[in-house]
Length: 171
Image (cartoon, rainbow, N blue to C red; front, side, top):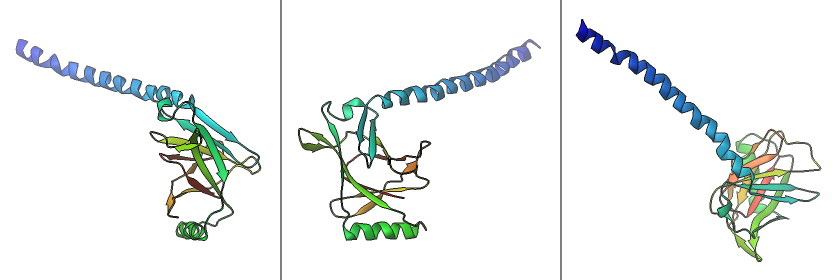
């Protein structure tokens, strides 16, 4: 009987350890918002009558302190517009409007790229919030890449990127 008592002692300890493991899983889940909070600190804002662009860095060291956000409306090439139209057809979506912007960071007039992924949020002051939108990156060779943009709870277009150049927002 004393041997069975010794054997039974470890088995109640095992279930006690399991809840402890569960409780240790909870603090990291609570820490996630705390890790995201600093990301909101390093923000670059561009505002005009036509478009507002907000770029959020995860790490302030990803861009030099004197970097400036530059947003310029650009005309898309026929080739890029055709590729975007093809993408819309593939996704069975109708294009309401296409807006394209050269979004970049400048330091002393020279273009610089962020050191890591940044979050970009685009809104249009003159329009209602977007219900559905797509974001495309157009590179210097006119190749179009879907950036998997989404609409956030404020109705603004949001996407993540590691590089800047021409971006197209399609409603």
